[in-house]
Image (tube, rainbow, N blue to C red):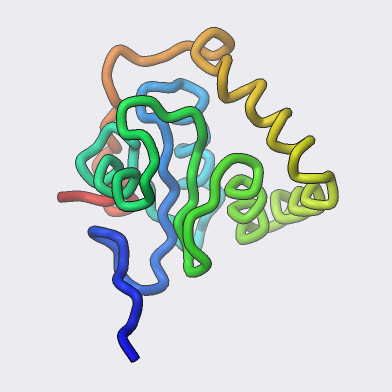
Length: 144
């Protein structure tokens, strides 16, 4: 039996969070993950990066416009509130407790998620260019 092929640039078991690299809210989320993921379970890639674009294309997602954060893990691709809750469930307490929000029906969770995601630039602003990781965080990001 043939093993399923892996997305480009990923190793088996690797977890990657795709985020909008020019969005100030999304960059804050990436910094939050770096700070609250002491076991380094998650790697990061901006959707504007070469790696991010390749992963978007692999999963058939738009590469020119991206309105959600995504998680790629052992179970595949997750977007919107499901991605957020899967990530939070792997972080230490108190963040892990927020996984209980999965009890809220997904259509309602995703509706709330979309209200923020679709207005993120207006609410939080945007950077002119994609921010680069600092030297001490560079290993947390996917690279060419």
